[in-house]
Image (cartoon, rainbow, N blue to C red; front, side, top):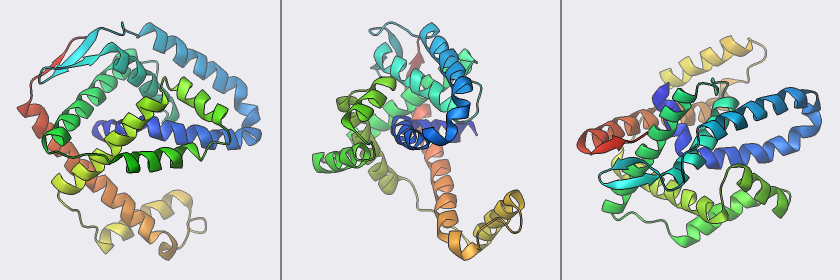
Length: 241
C-alpha cells in the first residue's frame, strides 16, 4: 500500500489539478458539505504551515544532488492534499513528512536515470499535454487559482509534465512488459460485483478493457517499485530533516 501511494504521488500535482477542475463542476451538488470541507481545509493549512522549512534549506541529497526546501514545501502541501482526498490521516505530520521526502527522493533518482539514459521530453509533447490540462478549466482565472493553491507556476507544471513524459518513456524502455490473464480479469470483476451487488455492477463485457488496464497498471507499478528499490541500494541518499 505504501509503495502504491508513493507512485500516485509521482504525478500528484497533475491529479490534483484535474480533480480540482472536476470538483468545481460538482460544487452545486455538494453545497451541503461546505462547512465540513472548510474545516478540513483549515486543519490541513495549519498542518502545512507547521511543517514548512526554509526555501534554501537542503532537505536531502541523492548522489550528491541537493533537494531544496522550496521543492519540499510544495510537495508537502500536495502530499497533504492527497492524504485528505484519499481518506488517510493528514494530521500525522511525521507520516506526511516521510511520504513527502520519499517521493522527492524517488523522483530525483528517476530524474537522474532518465538523464543518464538520454531520455528527453520534446517541447511539442509538453505543450500538448499542458494545453490538454488547461483546456479542462472553464477560465484562465480558475486555472491560475488552482496552480496557486498547489503552490505551482506554469513553469513548474511544465517541468512536472516533462518529468511525466520522461518517466513514461523510461517505463517503456526499462520496466518489463506485463501480461494480464483472463482469470485475473474475472477475479477482479467478481470482487467488483461483490462490492456493488449483483444487479448494480455493469456487465463484464462493458468494463473488461478498463479492468485489464487497471491490473496492468498495478503490475507495472509493482515492477517499477522493484526498479526503484535497486536504484536506492546503488545510490547515496541522505535525509537531512
